[in-house]
Length: 434
Image (cartoon, rainbow, N blue to C red; front, side, top):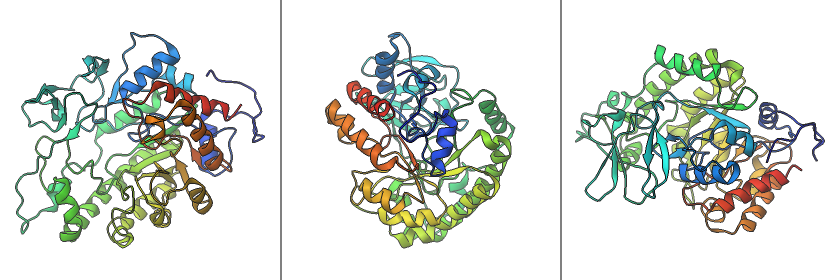
């Protein structure tokens, strides 16, 4: 899978470097080949178990321990050597802290339930629960109530709900705002270091994973990084609040938006053209069979804030904006485009109404599809390698022409995905541009 130099491709374009390839496809120009992302965001990665097996298959080195860069989902690092070997074009600029509130540093060994040896951050602190599983502590503080749980034999953490008793007659929006703040010098220094020594080198495309701009992302509502979160932190309570306490939710979003806009301006000035894409939000609006909320609810609760954030990015930078929403969202895509989003992920083609031919025909001139390249629910997880190969080639043939497609699977590659299937996926990618 080594890089090939000086080749001409079927599109007629001379070979590009990774950043050129990404920029072309983001602007709906057909590149020399479809750009590939694995690991640039928390929704386009691979579980550390899958990364470890893949790395051993491609590079050997059975003693290499992969770093867990997202301890919530236990996603593994795609290191520089693996990026090159797999011809991956995009890297991510993460936030300073993880979902559990500590930085990825001071790496230490850790053994998964199945015996896999990995590396985790120094403040990754777990204890055994009463059923033999693990609980993890926010900010690495064992004196605080645990904020996540991984049942024994499982592969990632679930959030522990720690909502304090609510007085619904005296709700205070500031309680749901304690995690949102303006960047301080530590944050700015962090981002400056990321561009001084970018992961994977300077010729790859880069995605900024923007903290604080996801309005109502349910994974973030419980705030597993806070030691003692206040406000509405129960998932069911939050969803009910979007109808029962709409004014409260809007007040939270309004103040959150003000902070996000200022932080975005700071990073636009700092990062400039070192970044091509900004991941803004992972709020899900779809289920397998339809929308999670009505289009009217989206227009009233979310769209005004999406418009403001996207407008700022487009006015002050050349960045493209990225939204992640799972499910059957075809009827919502026009609103997402009107709200200013340039990129749609994960493109869940297995959901109702999400036929790839229909999506490309109806929306391919207006939005970049980032994902949808392989079905992680079925084909990649349970199919044969030849099934995976055929599906990947078909999706590239559908989404790739004319640009506007960054290859990734439908959400993260899960822990037990057969390595033979992952290798078949990358073989199909390689063969698609030979």
